[in-house]
Image 1 (cartoon, one colour):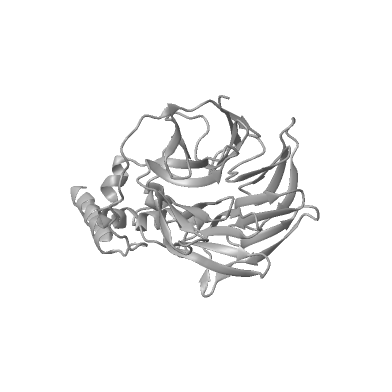
Image 2: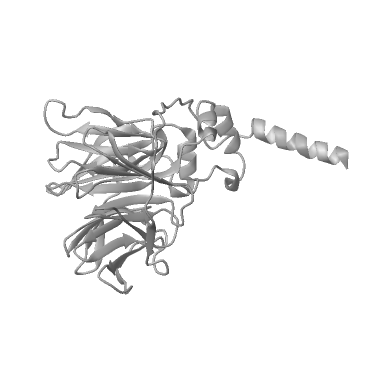
Length: 347
């Protein structure tokens, strides 16, 4: 029996040493901001828990909340009362980032399809772009629509799709990019590449800059669109205590950021050591690191300074992937849980 165990152990060791890994990891040493005290997060009310699953992004127009269901449907829910839902369209892939404009138009990032324009009245959609030059979007992720109608969106990775997104984070290479779809000309521009898992997007109201979250870089970058700095980028905030996902401009003028999972001691150990990440990806996917169920939301001013910091280490609703502030209410999307969150802030 011992000989058999040793033989099996030897085979396992040989496999871990010689079998090629699915990633080519880079050594990373991301900075960390100084620890500071967080405020207790207000209670989250869960809306539509029976009819909304994996509703990653949300958009609110008048008294309706729009969101993409994990099964491919774009849904509309009334906020004034009741839970009756309306199916607007059904995509082939999972709808991720979205923005609804009035009662007739919506823009949606659809996994495995591309950037979709939705006619809400006819309840039809068309895919306008799914690649750039010779690059096919693997994980078109998040978007924001500028006042002039142009659509800014991210492709989180041009190497790994949604089923392998953990590989992209573990590889630690800048496979993501930020794009702009020009509605008038029907053309697409790549504004910035070499982003570490490009995710949330927020365009300044005067269109002077656009912010883009780098989930795997624990930071948010600012790309200037006009003025003397046009075309250049800078760090807006870095060293975040978690993985930034959705970002949005609130009705109060602050920039809201969701940290979908905290940065842990394990991350700080494996990120500078590529061999650890190469090793773990040779194991079944069930062994890969999983997000920690812990909520954290930041509100930043225009200079990237933290104005509010709410945290909850034992949430009933977590994996918060998007956020919209309307008045004194925060509406929250989720990566993999049921329902939509709603949090009431003190006046």
